[in-house]
Amino acid sequence: MNLEYVQGEPMFTNINKVPKQYDYLTENIETDVIIVGGGVTGSILGYYFSKHNINSVILEKHRMGYCSTAVTTSLLQYELDDNLNDLIESTAMRDVIRSYELGEKALSEIDSFINEYGNNCDYRKKDTLLYTSKKLEIDEIYEEYRIRKENGFDVAFIDEVSNPYSFDLKAGVYCNNGGAQFDPYKYTHQLLDVCESKGVRVYENTEVVKVNYENSGVLVETSYGYKVKGSIVIVASGYNTKLFSKRNFGTKTTTFNIVTKPISDFSGWYNRALIRDNCDPYNYLRTTEDNRIIIGGEDINFVPDIFNEKAANQKYNILEQRLKSMFKNIKDIQVDYKYCGAFASTKDNLGFLGPDPDNSKLWYCLGYGANGILFATLGGMMLSDLYLGIHNEDLRLFKVDRFDN
Image 1 (tube, rainbow, N blue to C red):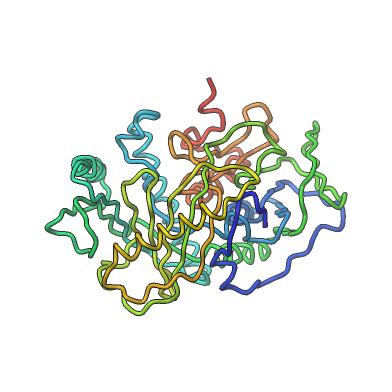
Image 2: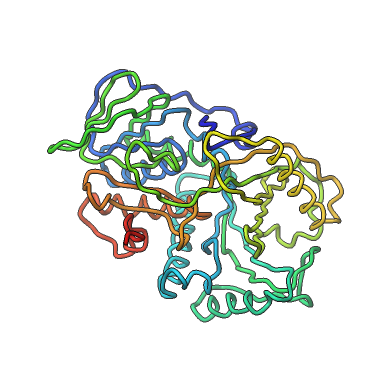
């Protein structure tokens, strides 16, 4: 695991057995598409390219589904990190609304995958809640509700009188079926199983150390000296992009998570909805199929190669106390896992999907922001189409150079 980006013991890779050991590359091979990164993003790409019968290879330098995939809470919502009115400072309102619609589309895609291949990843549709406990933010939350409602989203407004939760809530936007959750480690391996059945070759412990762009395509060299030749390479390596580009793709922070032991009673947690508060940085909560609670947040500036254990423990303690103060009726809260990982955000809360503006053989699928898995799903859909010459107009929202001056 890359210790620069992950610290602690992520729950999902600790409670699950490794379902399969993948080969490492031991020969020179050729393909059409080279996908670098064997986390949830790379596996999503492999799935969509294989649906189009495009010959693909996935290369992962560690084990499949570890690193950033292991620390994601997989709290999936169509909404973005910031509220609508905050986002229009950096983008147009119509584009924010469109990104919400695309989030719903990605959620529907995941639902379709589960319906076709079975639920082997603890998948569950969920309602979602965005709320504030501050009177000064009531109007802001109501405006978020109003705009969503006027644009056809299935939302309700909650106030102090109608609050079904045990914690202090002055205003909230409640979204019916506005999200989903699953086990990201299990989901990654379920996708990889489907990928391999459709002909995708998957290699772990196979680090890409060199990339050569040639007239006929791309040649990548791995740590053991073996090479893969393809027509394009797609970067699906999360925050580890230095080998491919000097671009600063987003602002990195470190976000912290704690996970409880299974609890017996969720009193005060209406519908066990996905919860996000309106703080900056915000806090987020979900439950799991084995009745745990995950709470995360307390982001701080990311410092490469430095881990401050004392600061991390302070953040874990803050999250634990916040959880206990929110749900006073839940008496058996005990922390089981503590971990933290890198998180990257952008001005418009969207990731980066598509070719490099200066290199048509170098493509990106970087799901930055809280909706990384949904962005990766959109990337799988749109980039596999693009490879076949079908351009989706929505790719403009995720252009790699959209912040260039």
